[in-house]
Length: 180
Image (cartoon, rainbow, N blue to C red; front, side, top):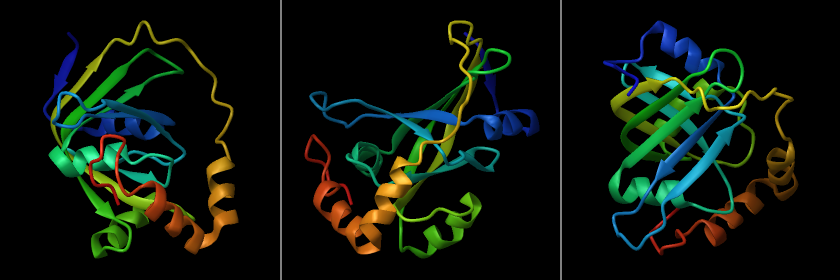
């Protein structure tokens, strides 16, 4: 079953900060809609408070997470230890989308350091369940580095090109929910 945490304390906060990758899962309300699970890397998962986390949502080919969170707020983030002792942490909660250009975005984005082009939103999650489990089945992997492809793609397109891409490709989810 694992362990439930009432909040993110120092040890767990440090462990979360050390992870180079995490996964985000969401689903629409409609039973016929598609469940989405997305890997996130390159940017940290920020712990904003004892029961609040946030991550930078970069421009991509889809907009499922943003669309689902805007529709119903349900979200879970999962982190796995691929190096060191085995561990899986799941952060369940209600998310909200803070779009680029909003005053709150400007305040939150500072926590991510240099973000470059392509940051379209920040997803803030208020946690209602924090748990960890053994992770004995997660294989060991060695970290080699970050891919540079997304950053180079955004630089090549430029700010206007990225904005046009978001308008064209991120307007709605694959199930027709509003995106950005």
